[in-house]
Length: 425
Ligand code: ADP
Ligand code: MG
Image 1 (cartoon, rainbow, N blue to C red):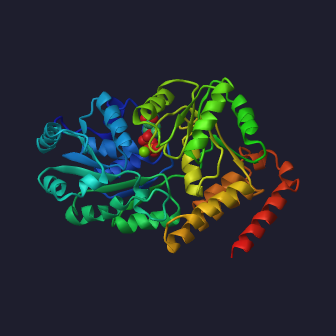
Image 2 (image 1 turned 60 degrees about the horizontal axis):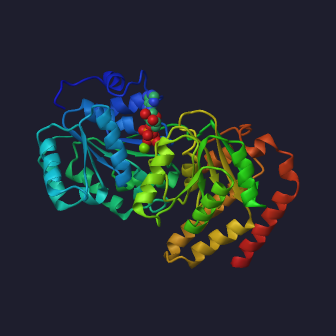
Image 3 (image 1 turned 120 degrees about the horizontal axis):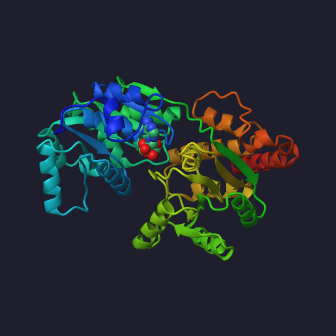
C-alpha cells in the first residue's frame, strides 16, 4: 500500500517465495485484483489464502478479511508479518490503544490486510470506520459458515450480505473448502454473489487414501493402524472429551507420544498441546472436532476417526487435514452399528428444531452410505459434492480389497441399519 503497485506474479515470488501459482489460483488473483467478485471453492490445502492476500497487496487500500476464529486470524497475521506484509487484526483482545493504532494505520494507508471477526465487522462503529478508509477488497474466508446447511453455521456470518449493499463497488471474494451444491447456493444468496465468477477446482485429494473398517476392537485397530505410521504426525478424532483423554492416556502407556485436545481443557494446556503438535514431529494429537479449522500443518500423515462424524462434509474436512503437502497420507475410520445408533440418538435427543433435525438426519445418512458402500469410496465422496469420478481409484480400501468387502459383513450391516431405520419411523 505504501510502496508502488506490484504485479501479482511479482508479489507471489518476492513476498511469498513461490515460483508459480497453483492451477486456478492465478486466475482468481487476476480477477479479484482487477476488481471482480469471486466465489472460490477449493479443497483444504489448495492455497485459498493467497487468492485474497495477493490482490489485497496489489490493490490500493486495505483488504478486509473476515475469518471466524481468533486462532485462525492470529496464525495468518503472524505468517503475513513474517513475510513482511503489513497485516493486523482487530479483535476484542486488543487494548484501546492498540486498536486505535491499528485503525490509524488503516486510515493512513499503511496496512495491506486487516483481519476481523464477523461480529466485530458488523458493529455500527466498525462500519463507520470502514466508510472512512480506502478498501482494497472484502474477503470472507470459511464462507460456508453462512449456511445453516453447512456443518459450521455461524449466525454472525448471515449478516455479511450487508457488505455488498454498503460497498457495492468494492470487490468481494468468498472462499470455502465445502462445496456441496446446497451450501454453495446459500453462500451466493446470503453474500449476494449472483454476479461473482465461480472458481472451482476438483475436490479430489488423490494423495489421501481412505479406509473405513468395521468396528471390532477399536483400540487394537488403532494401534495396528498407528504401527504403520511410526514417527509420523497425525490426528485421532474422538467424539467425546472423555474418550479423547482416555485414548491419549492409553496411547501414552503404549509408548506412543500422544496429547489430548478438546474445548474443555484449560486454555493454556490446549494451546501448549496444539503448539507441540504444530512444531514437533511424530506427535499424535487426540482431539474432538474442536481441533482443526484453519490449521496449516502440511505434514499431517494420517487422520484416524474412532467415532463417526456427523456428515460427509465434516468427514471430508477432518480427513482433509492430512497430506496438505501433497505427499501420501491416510484417512482411517472404524465404523459399526453402534456409531449409527449413537449419532441418530444424538440428533433425536438434541435441542434443534425439527427442520434442522431433518437436515442433520439426511447428512448423517449420506455419510453412512459412504461407510457402507462396496464401491470406490473416493467416487462416493466426490459424488456427494456433485463431482463425477470414474471410480476404481485404487487408493481406498474398497478398491484395494474388493473381495473382502463381499464377505457378508457389509450386507449384514446394511440389513441391520435398514431394520433400525424402519424401526424408527
Ligand atoms: P487453504 O486455505 O486452501 O486450505 P492455504 O491458503 O492455507 O490453503 O495454503 C495451504 C498451503 O499451500 C500453505 O502452506 C501455502 O503456503 C501453500 N501454497 C499456497 N499457494 C502456493 C503456491 N502457489 N505454491 C506453493 N505453495 C503454495
Ligand atoms: Mg484457508
